[in-house]
Every structure is written in C-alpha cells, then in structure tokens.
Length: 247
Length: 247
Ligand SMILES: Nc1ncnc2c1ncn2[C@@H]1O[C@H](COP(=O)(O)OP(=O)(O)OP(=O)(O)O)[C@@H](O)[C@H]1O
Ligand SMILES: [Mg+2]
Image (tube, rainbow over all chains, first blue to last red; front, side, top):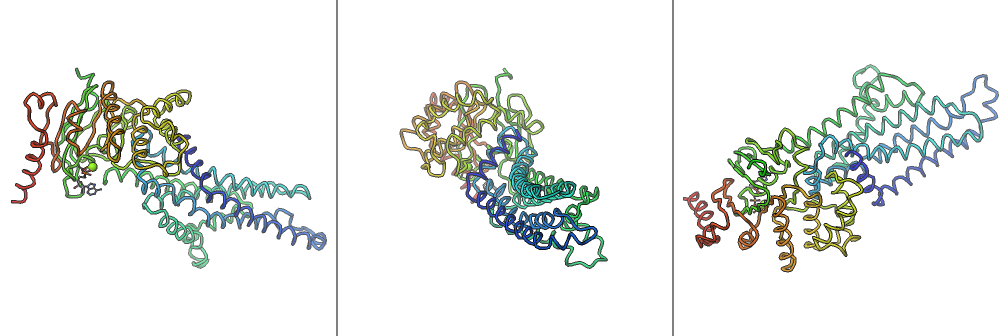
C-alpha cells in the first residue's frame, strides 16, 4: 500500500515541470561549483606536491560540493514538500485517501518516501559527479560515503519537517514559506548562538551535517537525525488523525 | 438475518465544539437496499456520511460495516466501502485512466484485474472516450461521473453517495439513477439528495434528517400505499421544526 502512494507522488512530481526544473537547476549549480573547484585544484596542484601531507582531491573538490548541496536541498525542499498534504486538502482529495483501506501511517510514510526517492536521485547525481574524479586520481571513498549518508539524512530531515508543515494548512504557498523559514532557523541556529550554548548547538542541523561533511560518522548525530525525522513524521500522523476527531 | 445487514450505525452523535451537528442517528441497511437521505441544508447529511465512511470520528455511538467495527478496525471495514463525497475528490492533473487506476490500487484490486475493472467502470459511467483527458479539463458533469466511478470501482458492499446527481444533464441523471438501481441489487446504497422525486424513483427507503436527527423513516412502498406525498411530509416536518424553533 505504501508503494501505491510512493508511485503516485513520484508521478505527480514528474508530471509537473517544477520537479524537472529543480533537478536541472540543482545539477547546474553543483556542476558549476564542482568545475570551479576543479579549476582551483588544478592551479594549486603543483604547489600542493611540495607540502609534506597535502589534502587530497576529495577534500578540496568534493567537500565543498556536498556542503553546497545541503544548502541547495534546503532551498528546494519547501517547493517540493509544500504540495504533499496541503494540496490534497485544498482539492479535497484527502477524502479519497482517508476513505480507502489504507492507514494514515502508510499515507504519511508513502509521501515521505516519495520525496526521498526524488532526493536520492539528486544525491546520486552528486555522488556520480564526485566519482568522476577517479578519472584523474585517487579518491577518499570513506569521505564520500560519510558525505552521502550525511546528505541523505539531512534531506530526510528536511522532508519530514516539510511534510509536517504541509499537513497544517490547506495553502501550499503558506506551507512553503513556513517550511523555508523553519528550516533556515534550524540550520542557522548555531550561527546566532555563541560557542558556549551547548543546547542550541545540539539542535542545529548544520552542526550535525558538518560532522558528516568532515568525514565523521558520529552516532550522536545519526541519533539526532533519526529522532528529528521520526518526530516530525509522528507529528504529521497525529495531526491528520486528530483532524478526523476534531473535524 | 444479521448476515445480510451491511451497515449498522447505533446512536451515532457528532459535535463540532459545542455545536451538535448529528445527534443519535440509528441506521440499518440490508444488502440490496437503497436508502435516500433527505433534509434541508445543514441538516447533517454530509456529516453522517463522513462518519459512516471513517472520514470523521463520531463523538459517540458505534458503526459496523459488514459486521466489522469501523472504529476499532477501520482498514478492514473500509474494504467494503465506496464513498463519493459532496465535493468529488479528484486530482486535477491526472488523466481519467491514471486516476481510476490509482483508486483501484488504493482499494487493493489486484494488478491483473485492474485493466478489466477499468474498462467495465468507464463503460458503466459513460467515460469511455474520456480516458486520456485530464480531469481538470472535464466539465462538472464528467467530473462527477469520475467521482462516482471511483466510489464503485472495487464493487463495495456499501456505497455511499453524497448528492451524486448534482451537475449531471437529464440523460446522465437517468443513466446514473439506473446505475444506482443496479448497484442496489448487489450492494447497499445510501445517497443524499435534494430532489424528492429521485428518492421516490430509486430508493427503497427514505429518511428525512433535520437539525441532526432523523425525523422520518419509512419504506417507499408503504409511502406509495398510503398515497402520501413526500414533498408534503418534507415541508411539514422540516419547516415545522424550524418554525417551532423560531417561536
Ligand atoms: N468542520 C465543521 N466545523 C463546524 N461545523 C461544521 C463543520 N462541518 C459541518 N458543520 C456544521 O454541521 C452542520 C451539518 O452540516 P452538513 O454538511 O452535514 O449538512 P448537510 O445536511 O450535508 O447540508 P447540505 O444539504 O447543505 O449539504 C451544519 O450546520 C454545518 O455548519
Ligand atoms: Mg451535504
């Protein structure tokens, strides 16, 4: 049953030009950054050879691309997640799902996974870009793997948050703006606070993504992401179920 | 006797905050019965139907569909239900075929059966030459037909139609009434309408709701034997209640 929802969501994404435009834009921006970095690397390559322990091609080119990818995903998520539930409510199609023999949990998870399939496609393209560097030299695969996991978890967190916001309203545009605001807030919370505020730092998505970006697969960060995703998925399910009770 | 009962609602109530929208509704329908729900605007017909289909939780009371408790076992109960809400739950940017396939999958029709069901349903609802049209570009009447098709594609035991003939042309009204009559042979049908003659021509039983309660409940055959006029009863009961209330 979850499969039915995933298929429908993907079909809806790809019948609208928005998804294609976003996917192309994402790829253009990241390829541009990638090439810029590559250019810079080639220029300083001769100097790097003189250093005893030089940073590898992965550190210089791939890390910034992944860091940028996370920010681009943050911008893109609200545009994709806004419709997920808000639009169903607006056009009264939520009734179709609610009248069918499918649980609210399946609906929510299906929509979340649909968005994740889309993001995975974008992330595969980014990873492919990095792996193309193999043509010219050695790669630090550990770093690429930790970055990929980090980016997937980040995208999943964004999706879960966007899905929840979308479930609160019948206006996709409002959902988009609120999601963007919320995500920026969560992303930047660590810039606003000083080094000494442990608590706020712990909830900054950026801080956790940076760990993965630097190649650290930290269990605390994984736990944070998983908890974040689960919380918002459960909130979404509870909100939709509550609507049945409140009307 | 009880095995033939397809839907059984007992003392169902529904409040919106402190406002009582539906109060102590009792309803029992056997296989092969068509029940017409009448009532002035705001009487609680749609609210009742949304409760019977699991879209809205009752504040009190119990609902059983084919012997399965809708509240404690919603998914199993919903397998036996088909619902056309007041506003048809249509995805504007799907084609008729895509939409009906999705509805079929939601109702757990096996993949190999879908093609055959689809052809059958399109023929029954007069949608054959609209297969590839986007739902958003269809006229109101055709959209209504797609909504009806969605509700009956899985041959449910209980079919609940909220104002099914709204927006249809006279020919199509006749067709749809014939269709409802046919459906009423193998399943139970509950429909709401504001057209009194419709009830007289296709229903086996009529209930009139007013201010959230059932004020009249009789078999059409009895009504015809007594040669009473439905319109007179309707006016008396509903206006009488409203007048009394105003005094
Ligand atoms: N979500 C809601 N919140 C508050 N009140 C509601 C809500 N939905 C319905 N009501 C109220 O419940 C009452 C019954 O509404 P309902 O839609 O069931 O009427 P109806 O019999 O279907 O009317 P109509 O013939 O116009 O379709 C109305 O007074 C309506 O204002
Ligand atoms: Mg109504």
